[in-house]
Image 1 (cartoon, rainbow over the protein chains, first blue to last red):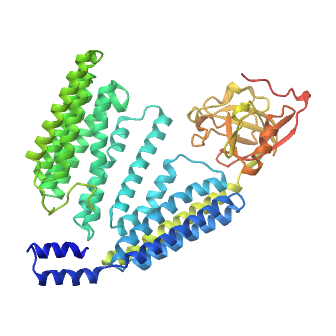
Image 2 (cartoon, rainbow over the protein chains, first blue to last red; image 1 turned 90 degrees about the horizontal axis):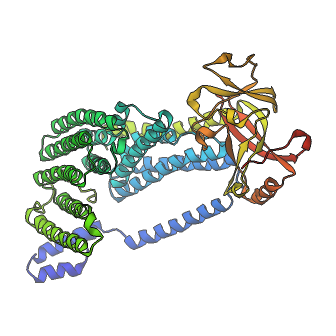
Image 3 (spheres, helix red, strand yellow; image 1 turned 60 degrees about the vertical axis):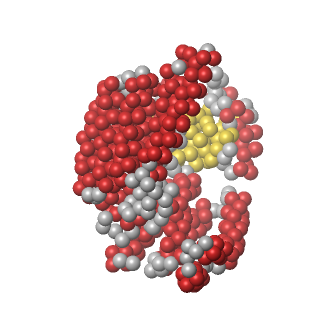
Amino acid sequence: MSDRKLDIWLDAGLIDSATALRIREYEADRSRPLGLWSLIGLGALAIGLGIISLVAANWDEIPGLVRLSVHALLIAAVSGGIYLLQPRNGFLGLYLKDVLLFILAILGATFFGHLGQVYQTSSPLWQPMAMWLLLFSPLLLLAGRGWLISLLWIVALLGTGIAHWQWYAQQTGDPPAIYVALISSLPVFALLAGIFLGSRSARETFWSQVGQFALASFVAGASLKLIADGVTIGGLFGSEGKAGEIAAMHLGLWSVAALLAYRLNRTATGISIAAILFAAALTSLVSSIAQSTEPLVNAIFFIAFWAAIGWSAIYSEWRNVFQVVVAIIALRLIILSFELASDLLSSGLGLILAGAITIVIAILAYRFSRAFAPARHPAAGQTPDPSDP
Amino acid sequence: MTRYQRLFLPLALLLPIFGLALIWLLTERQSHQGTEWDVPIAGYDPRDLLRGHYVQFQYDWPMMQEDDIPIWSGSGSNLCIVGTSPHIQRVVTRDLFRPAAGASAPDCDAVAKVNPWSEEGNDGLVRDRIYVPQQAAREYQAKLADPGLQGIVRIRISNSGFITPLSLAFQPRSDAEGGLEERP
């Protein structure tokens, strides 16, 4: 907090001197010796890097059991640190604990690899990942507070799902439709968990972040599927008949999820989330049935899905999301103009046309976004902006 | 801190510690079980000998055609090893679904299965890799390239039938054994 700003506001008559004094006293109370902390942090970083390079240089010399024991001791020590920090609510309790949780989780994940190296064992990637999820989820979800932990957990969950999917597809050659429908719905389950537990937990922000990351990955996955439908017949899920079957199961699953999301959160946010889930299921099913690789048809499905997200953003007043939606639809339109003009692209006229359309769309999108984006105002409930801590 | 957290946080902290310890213990126990065998190796590509920390090689199972080696974990066919550890007398394929395929079903001293989770995937009975210390890498490379030396890999076959390569040794190649054919 800079005193200069306060002086400027004082001079401009925005605040009176009593307020300025109160702000200064408040800030003085809250201020942390940031310089000291950063030097301590720098020192710790140097020590850490030194230890890592010492260990790395002598990795082969150190017996496996010693290495594993040190690894296990580190895990125990970090766990002890988290236990001691738990009752604290200030800077240490909120931030340092999350950082320690993150370090503990990474130490735990690398322990599996370390075991495999020492004992020369191997297993499919999803097995240690699933075991890690089983062992660490209770801790992360019980004690996590910020985006570092919520993002780590969502990435681990979806990563495990994808690893299992790959492994299972490799094993069976052609996994059953119900399996694909369920495993690709993992973000939806995580989203529901975020909504359900957010309303029952004292750490509402944490669960809302879990929900936001889950929703963001869901939207990304659904978009990818819609794009893939236009690239090859059958899209992401391979064969033609199966893609429709899976999309039909998705429609059932995601409709139930949409209903649940609304019942758990009867606010504008709940309705918006339900709308996004349902719109994804519907556009995905229609796209899978249509099996069209026509650029125009494919673009329409994609834009329809993102238009639904745009509607949800207006409904729940998610300003940033709305702007992203406008940008993505504009981008898709620009790509479509290039796709449609591909015959002309070899000629100078086609390039001029596509370039002109690009500029027009960009300007229109900018104006549209300015005119219709929900007003910026402090979020009362949850905003699905992942950059917002 | 809510009451729930006070109660469950210590448990949540202990769960990973005990879980990892248990996994460590099981891995340690597993690593001592099973039988050990010496298998000649063959067919390595000279350009492919050493990739960083490991040597990639092909198993040259005694008395066994390469085409007969099971390469799919779901096929139900295994390698049946006959001999006294660590010396392999002969190796035959054993088909679980068609046990009468051979004239007489031999008593196996060890059974090796395809481990689909190994780094080589379904090809785990055909080829494998062994990690070597970095300092010894140059020496291994020279020996592997030496046509007069036969590489021998000591493997452990666990009780569940999966192979773990343990060490790599070399012995002079005798012409009487027929040596190794050149592979394309």
